Image (cartoon, rainbow, N blue to C red):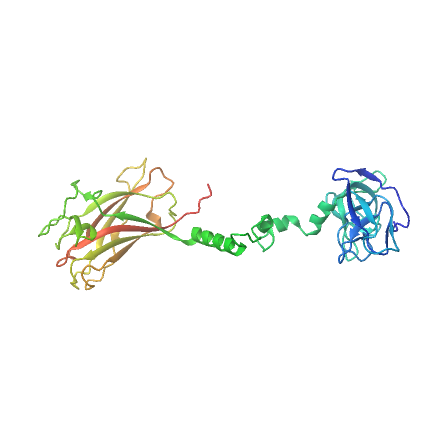
Length: 374
């Protein structure tokens, strides 16, 4: 159908949205009653939608003739009706049932088509054909503006700047926190969740005991295999072993954190110091590790500990050092199991403290967190 050259019936089927919007008409433009109206790109004043210079979306249908053919921008205004309108279907790009619910475009100021283009602005949402083959078009200034911004479904899910979550305000700078600060903080949190190692420090204190059940007493200097609680030089607390070829082990039960990722290895470090700097006393530690899980036998699992790395024997006396041992993921208990824990036994390896006493201040478990989804 050709563009309007005179007024026509609005053919409004239903309003359904705000019934009218109001805007100024562009210079030298006549809007006939019933014509699609769209704002000019440069000025925002109304012109005919379709077949003319404006590619902005249709904002409504002229409710009455607005003749500004001899006027300047905004000399007169036009009320634009909103709602569902009956409009001619294009002969060259006809709308069919397959286009139901999709955007349609103004071929001229009273005809709609199934595709846009340089002079075919968005007209509204196609709601099917009536019994005479006319297209029913929902025209709404608000809906058309949003549809004209692009593929909303893609944009709302986008991670691009100014799209997706940014549309709800993260993009905007606040008076207290800038968007750059928010983005940096979110990246830091996410990176921490994905990669940060987490630690559990287990002090060597009175909760440890000898493997025969004897509670640890105060350390007694001498030719004894028995370790004891000590405060070395009034500043370093821990469990101290005498320089003996076969020191006694101690033990403790340690819970497994719920967020431990049992698909990644765990590092156990023994934090310690020696009373001297004898190079031959490059101390290592024999560590026994046994899983204890509710519902299983307490002796069901084999020892998967081992001997830790040697500390530096000739480091200055009282130098704090760490001796590490890797606990393989394949042996770790399932943190989702009820009350999962491990029993740990610890002693300096025989023959590695022949001259110097050694004090252990704590054990440190370093593990990878599991990102929980439920």
